[in-house]
Structures are given as structure tokens and as C-alpha cells.
Image (cartoon, rainbow, N blue to C red; front, side):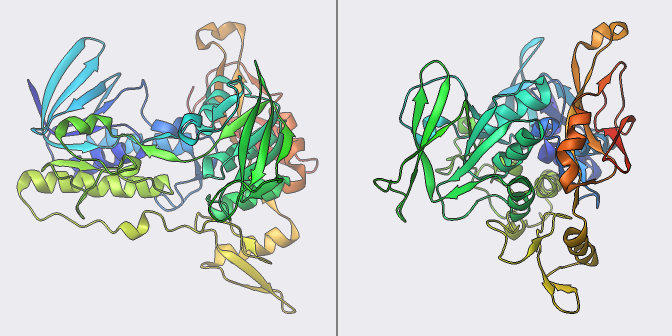
Length: 460
């Protein structure tokens, strides 16, 4: 049986950070098991920006963040095994792995579970009605659009105001779909205030709070949904139903930590499927640690990585019999959520989402935690601009081996808010004929006055 010092399960932002930190802390052999063909986890399909602001001090897209943190792990000497699907972890830290060359068992001195989370589905929320085509989770719709170049539909209703749903509302609008509305059962959106501002308010997408989808309408394909107002007990209020025509319903109704592989250890999971740990991120089984969204769903990939680093260092401390460091759970979910405050500008420079007010008549602002926020608020008042993220296709007879690949991109310069759809129309016409590397300028468009460079955010 092969033995390692530290085995990390999961190659997302938490697992990669944990593995790198374990190596930097002095672990000899650190191996990361990733079931997919590439590391990065969900980041690979999160082509929007907003990542890395805390960790790297830059605004990165998901693919750019994935490249950075994967490089950190590789440079630290972590061995990443792709196509390795862990199916079982024993209480004695033996791990059963399914790989291309068969099933094998390995032994670890310490194990870090960084297996992420999955989406809650329609079955978990029990919406009445038929079972037509056209109902997707937000992550599935995101994968179809950003990885496979497939638009889920043209007339979209989104149930749930989680961050993935809000981000997909913007993405659908930029791609030419009609987002009819976002429906939220709570009194306020549950996503970050900055996403409510830049994903819904920017595009005038209606948001119905204290409402839910009460019925699915359609046979072979979704034709409409019925939405109904709910009371303080989340019960349907009679005579408030409204029919909204749509061909697609996107569900953004919560995430469930993915921890099935730990059940064989004897660990009793929490009711929401998360893992109970002590303040050192260690489960009730000595030497088995948990971090990231599999431990507890977190707001930001930056925080997932930070917690992964703490788990990686503590795994090494455990092996050596040293004192472990405590994790402060207050940073797990501390971002501003819900509606932006009235008569304010929601800063999108960083995930803090400061609610900034103008102080007339002197024109100064208040409520910002930094000078960058003040500058953003003044620009937002006079000339609001946004970064566009999207995908373009690689085609060309000379590169058949590439197939019809998608390249995630972003605009190098911010685009005037009123010109977003105009510039996006030009981006949709871009076709590439050769492989590209992350950071390459692949095309140029114009907002009508200024040239806008288009940059690849991943290597294809």
C-alpha cells in the first residue's frame, strides 16, 4: 500500500491551497486527488470577475484565479493526480481511489477533505407541476453556457437570489436572453449586495421578494411558471398567483456540502451535510481535516483558499505532534448581503460591497472603507463602467484537433454601462483560428469612442 504524509481530496481553491500550505509547512509527500481532468473545481466555469481581490489584490476571473492557485501548488511540489475518484475514507486514514488503472488503496498520515458542494435541485424544494424540459440548476446552466456554448433558453425565470443565480441573470442578459424576473422566497436577496447591484439593477431585471414558484406549467417543454406571494411563515398567500411565460427555469436555491466519502469513517455529519470540526478544522477523527465549502459553504473563493491553507498547516502540525492554529469562523461569511441600502452606491471594487453615500453640496462621499471606493462612487455617479466577461470560439481548418473550443475572455478596459450590450454584440462575433494563452490579447472591439482590448483568461 502506497503511503503519503498528507492526502488532499479535491482540486478546487480549498484543496489546492491546502496542499501547497502542507508542502510549505514541511510535509514530505503531499498528493492531491482530483477526479476531473483539470484542477480548479467550479472556478473553471466561473468566467466572471471578482475573484482574488483579497488573496492577490487583483480582480481576477475564475479561470485566472484557478491558474494562479494551481501554479502555487505545483511550485510547492504537490503531486496532483487527475482522474482519481476517491470513494471511501476510513477512520484509519486509508483511502480507496478509483483511477484509470483500477482501484487502489493508499495510506495517509493526515487527510484533508476539500470536496466542495453541490446544488440543491427541484426535488429538494418540491415545486408542484409537470416535469418538462427547460429546468436547470444555476450551475448546470452556467456549465452549458460557459463550457459547452449552449444557451439554456431565451425567456428565463430564476428562482432564488443566491450569487450564482444573480451572476447567471447578468450572463443571460449579455448573451441576448430575456430574464423575465428573479424570484426570492425571503424578504431580501440572499446574494451579495454588490451582485444585486451589478447583476440585477444594471439590467433592470425585476426582483420579486417574498415570492416563490408555486407551479410548473408545460408538458414537453416549459411554457410558464406560476409565482405566488408568501407570508412571514413562507406559506402561499391566496389570490396572489401570477403566470409568467418562460421557456427556462433556473434554480439558485442553495448549496449542499459534499461529504459522502467521510461517512465510512463514522463521522456523523450535520443536518445540512456539512462536517463538524473543532477550531483547528479537524473532524472527530484524529488526522482527518475538512476545509472550504465541504465544511461550510463560504462567500468567496479567497476565503476558501485561506481556510485551506490553515487546514494544510494543521495537518503538518498534527503529524509532528505540534500545537495547531485556530481558525476564526467570523471570516467565513462576512460580506454585505441583501438589498443595497437606499440612496447609496454599492461599491463593486471588492466583495465588501461598501454602501457609499454622496454628501451634498460638497460632493464628497461617506461609507467607503478605502480611497478606491470613494473614487468608484464618484465615477459611478458621472460615468459608470463595467468589465465584460464572456467566451469566444476557436475555429479554423488548421486546428481541427482543438474542435470548437471556448476561450473565456474579459475586456482589458472597463466599458461604459450604457454600451455593454453594444460591445457584447461585437464580442459575440469574434472567432479565433489558433490556440491562445491566458493573458493574450485575442481581439479588439470599440464602445463607439474608445478601443477595448479583449483578453483570454485561460489557456486553450
